[in-house]
Length: 68
Image (cartoon, rainbow, N blue to C red; front, side):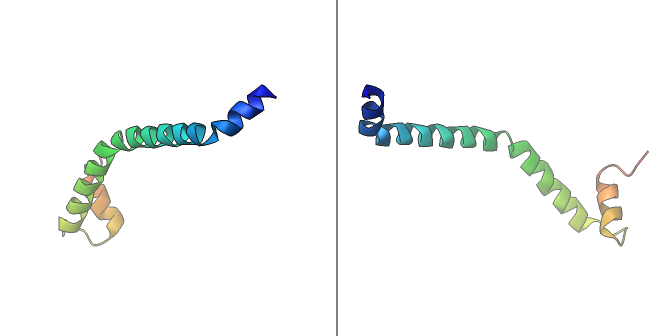
């Protein structure tokens, strides 16, 4: 029963450590998504500026290189 008593007496410390580790993990994951966010912003701007095509699929196709 010593292990159970240890868990009960240090529950807040253990939960705080788990919470901090989770927040750090999330922050590193989000940091790796920054290039994708920048690319998405460039795509959005290109699609808004494209006037040569009427439909959204054609504008996306044009901003992504236009095929062959």
